[in-house]
Image 1 (cartoon, one colour):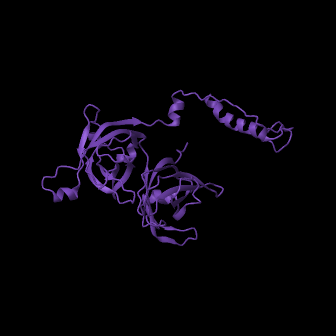
Image 2: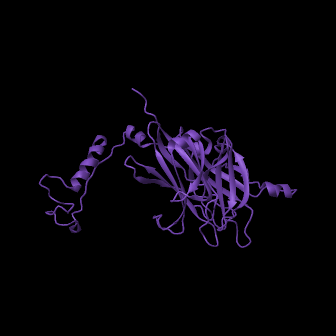
Image 3: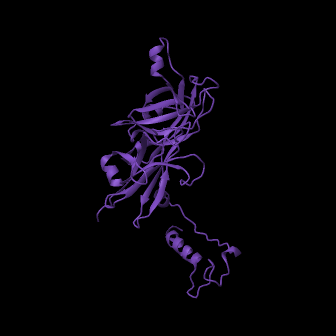
Length: 336
């Protein structure tokens, strides 16, 4: 029996020279991924985070897709300027899109293409870059991180620090994760977070990892506080009683100041590698799924004697509720 040619692929997205749709500031881009089903209908898979005031965004959120060698999987990457909190993208400014296949991205490993508008004309000088990597390691890393005595980059108030973690690739540093911003604090403690080991170092515990610490600014001109490089091997030495600590170094500042030591210290209290269990792991481990059905016989569904009602008592003995129960029950029954 031939092996099925399927694997999970992680896609990392970045853009350059996006259209600026905002007056007095820059666009706030988000990337949405759509796939084309067999009936030629596009459906949304996932979205990245929104990057505030940025025309050259590097999205931290990754897209994970099942890649089938024998199937042409059509993808559409849409870039939108998000100016409100609604989920609907139709009321947001469209910055451009790219249609391609997953095969093109995987075979290129790093695909850069110009963005186009709905009428297929160029979206200014905007480009999109998609990097693909096969996921061979399903472990994740749990982090607890804090910092102390960070440089103050703000004239009024204190710095608003956040961290960016980068993975070393053949073409340079690739963003793996961005923490939340801790406002007005030179001694921040970030909320615990997870990073897939594959995204961070490709499963190689000795591969260099770069960490940048920034002061967040609303206008997108974030100030670099400092950086350092490390490895997972070094980070795993961390414990709450004996943290792994790193000098946050600003190279420009170091070159100017003779007695410069650092721009603060970043302290890792926890760096724990754990396995991320799949649905199949739970099933094969003995997890039981209970199938329970409850039906709300609300009057708003109409008279059960009329075919328009969801509760219609059909002469054939079938209605919408029974069809749904049978469809779900036929799948669940093997695990109950």
